[in-house]
Length: 151
Image (tube, rainbow, N blue to C red; front, side):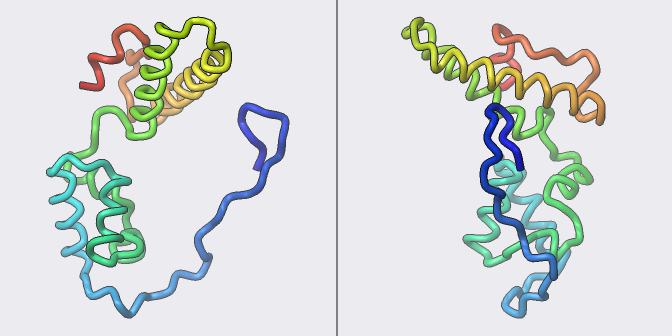
């Protein structure tokens, strides 16, 4: 896979095995896992945090193997999905921290370039989410007012 912001090809990432094994040590049923996902979402955890918590605490290696649905789809069906998708939210937080850093260190050109790259990723994600109706059509990324949206 080619890198997004460089001319290098890079190494390919790891992938899950293509054959889906049925794990004998998992003793949870579909409804139990869905209820656990809903309970953790109501506690304020994001979908990635839910997956990590289920893996580490309950020994559930993959929610999709058991429920045949992704965590985000389970949250969507229960109307618990966040207004702003998780990956967009984390990119916006990163841009906010880099902007705060640049206020103190205005000559840090490496950080300026990082901010440009991060904000271009944000714009591409916003375009994608608008096209797939995950964000409203009038949603706009504005660095000055986006802090208020995240809270």
